Length: 146
Image 1 (cartoon, rainbow, N blue to C red):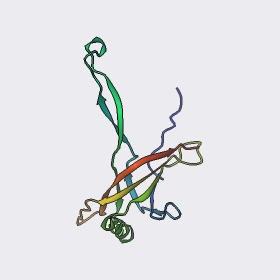
Image 2: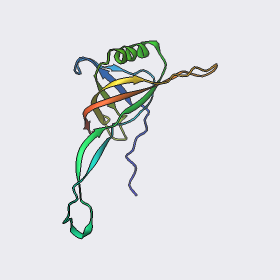
Image 3: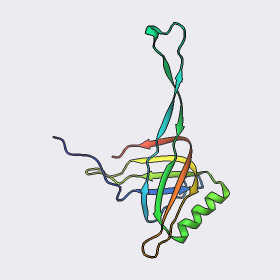
Image 4: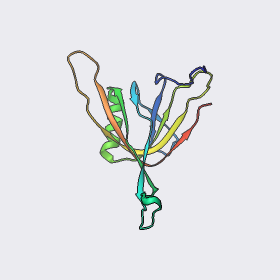
């Protein structure tokens, strides 16, 4: 049986840029981060002579799904993300996955989107974890690990 080439999330990095990728700001103490996904529309193109009385479909447009992430609260990141959300800034986002065994670099997803800050419940004991969602726009690119 072949050894697994999978990786765990430890070592992943999520960053954003507001200057088209010249400088990047990493989300400190990142806890979770989705990889970008798409849904594809299913367009019905059935007609009166469709073969075998069976519906026919074609692919439609791809729709960008949101990307959720969470991090341990810190004022610097929260403040920067709050400013992005308040201004409605569409930022460049880069999610670099941790390298797997035998890899020198991790896989990289890049995409554009605006951020929405979610909950950050405070407890008597425990670390405040902020949730946020990147509302994606446009296509994501994927660079495989090497």
